[in-house]
Image (spheres, one colour):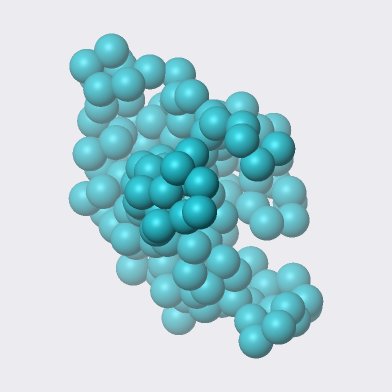
Amino acid sequence: MKFLDQPTPACAGAACSPSIQNGQNLFVQVGCATCHTPSLTTGLASSAAFSQKQVNLFSDLAVHYMGSQLADGVTQDSAGPDEFRTAPLWGVGQRIFFLHDGRTSDLLQAILAHGSQNSEAERVVDMFQSLDKSQKQDILNFLRSL
């Protein structure tokens, strides 16, 4: 398992449709990429296979306050029932259920659930909501391409 590669996106760069390319740009512009960081580089490791490698996981791996809409009543270590580590979005286009507990199969609902009052993502969800219908669809298309 340790040596399995990251999921391969459905397309890359110029090979993606204009909708997916626009969705990728909007994903960054509205602020989703603040926590769902597209790419990180691993640190130094004892194995060259893991050392200084780019990983396109779409996560910052940090714990964030996400508010009451996502709260699950579970406390893990120092993270409260409304705090979660940013889930990697790699492979999200191949998933059937979304969010940490699989509560929805609707990707749009998963995005909107991040918008609880005082959630760290509240402003980002507000910006997403201000987009027109086709721009929202572009973001959804981008996510499904991951």
